[in-house]
Length: 264
Image 1: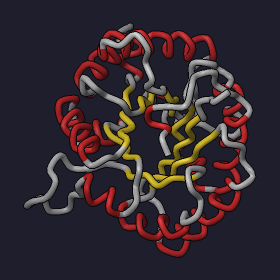
Image 2: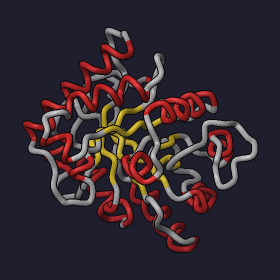
Image 3: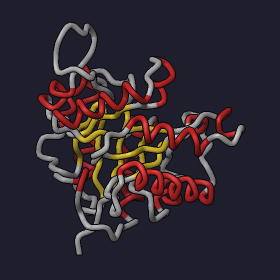
């Protein structure tokens, strides 16, 4: 029976020079060879290292794929310092992170802009990974559900066929994660919101968790059946820790058929 692989995405953020990036990506690609087919890994390096990482991932196939950290809404033009989705696809990238909390906060990106980026990514053949999440203040005020609903409604296209990443802003970089019960409740809420937003009975959009994911926490987080994988930050900057998280993901099989954004 075909199963849906867990997706383990590494976001390097603004880290990595040429030689170190090549070594890290090569180590991940080599380590991924021993992983079973029930897990897929994605590396999202800085733009300057996309070609370098693509070189390291040659021959890795679907076990480790290339992703990027953002894209512009336009195909080309007078946009100094920006990168289009078509340019990313040209490097061999398959995935692109959009709406990360750091982009929303530090660059003032709103849902409408993120939705335009999703459209650009889809048009270029990339798989968009849209990040959503509430702040500590929104959580304490009891507005988390409202915020998540608004972000899903505003950021996703009607025919969205990508990946949703739930990253509570209050957990990122803090070393704190939601309890298993809290995370399960939130994931069920998100599944319901997706069904309402996309007007589909059979949703194929995987939901990832991101927020201080470590090798020690990964087995518990990934044991939640509805979870489609994890979005990893600092732990993806070291091959051994990133691979340990992927190993934890490989132990948790999904019963859903292979489809949608897991296409290879």
